[in-house]
Image (cartoon, rainbow, N blue to C red; front, side, top):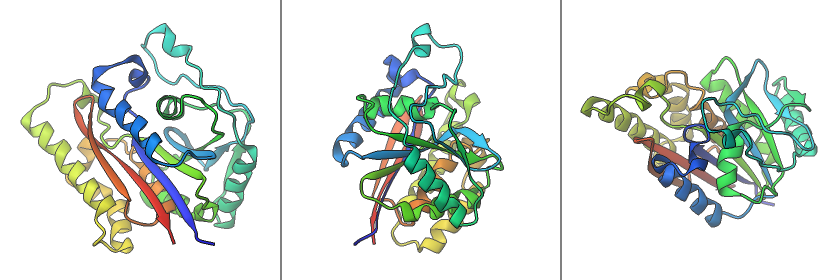
Length: 269
């Protein structure tokens, strides 16, 4: 039987703004809806969100996790959003076993809910909230190579009905979002995005070359301008580690007046 792995890195925008009809998120909302209609609907989703860091990889294991409204300063209705998708304790256990088999100490958490890195994009993509979800934390050292290894350790979960989603943002400089756009800031944004697009999609790169580029992402043009903290980039590293290949599709778009990108992997070997 062939080994099939599907992963999607998405740029999830600013807090709950994509759900408020914000014009600066219109392209993102349209793209996520389109992606959801063009790929086979998954039977389960493994979500790696930029908004959860732990010392050891931690996996939600509750049957019906609640929501964590981990943003502030938004209208009251954004704290009443519901996304009642079920958890998947069996998948959580399988993830833990695969990580531990790879020598990665992992932890199950039966009480943690789902943060907005999960429920905002999934409300757009799968509004019925009928797909069981499990969330996997980042490792709080934010080491790029370790996050690629995290994805690699989960390759044995390969199943065409499982979708791994890395929920982050290819551009995540909060100060820049709220500063006037200049020719210089635009050039820096575009240069890093071009590097990321080439890294993820160029089939002429060997996988060793691609991995080295991602491990050394700070050497990319204007990397620290576009990713001052990197937690919003690392879900991509987990997705790449899981897929182990050039992406199948790359999507370029504008979010909050910044060039951004998303990447889909559908790998069969």
